[in-house]
Length: 295
Image 1 (cartoon, rainbow, N blue to C red):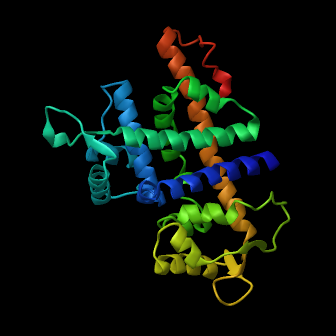
Image 2 (image 1 turned 90 degrees about the horizontal axis):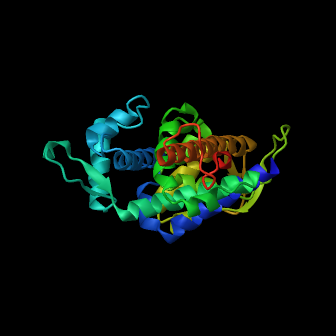
């Protein structure tokens, strides 16, 4: 459990560093709905690159991919892809039928998704002393095989896209996931019997609003909702100073992260097999340089 906690915390720190280094890019996918849509959009892009018979990025194809989850409406998907084009995350794909509104991811999008995926590979390696990240560096093409599998796995995991209400109160809001990471990051492993509040030091909604470029009103509302739910509190009546969070919030957060990391690990493992199959043309043989057991 200690290594798991350490791995989750190291991944969270890297995600927070990314948010601070690339605030505009991260802010655009800083709530769970847009995060899911962005992952599935990139998955369509990589799938189409590997096999042109697979559907490319388009409003109808994105809607079809997420239909069982109901995470977004038709209008939301259309608006999302329009914004992706506006901010140059995707660009039109040459097609004989312009009605398809087909698109492809830009180099910037691919670099961002690689950064995200590598963070999680390193987190997994911290947990089990694996070599996934080193293997990914030696074989960078693994990303286009692994990321679509990761996205598809999460679409099949209701525990991920419909998280507990403790998590949803944060992740449904812009930058809520970064705030949640920061609240939990320093908490040590919890015993099963732990029920008392966990003191985490001084916390100020105003400081978070400045750090993650959200309005003070938004930050105050987010913390107010969490406080009313008994997930967070302060020694004083005001929302600043010495702060505590509930053990249930920590447990739900770590379970939610475990679901995601398990999907990354499985996707990476399956991608290694698929790459070997494609290279040697033998579904039962693996190339020594892309070891199946590394996932």
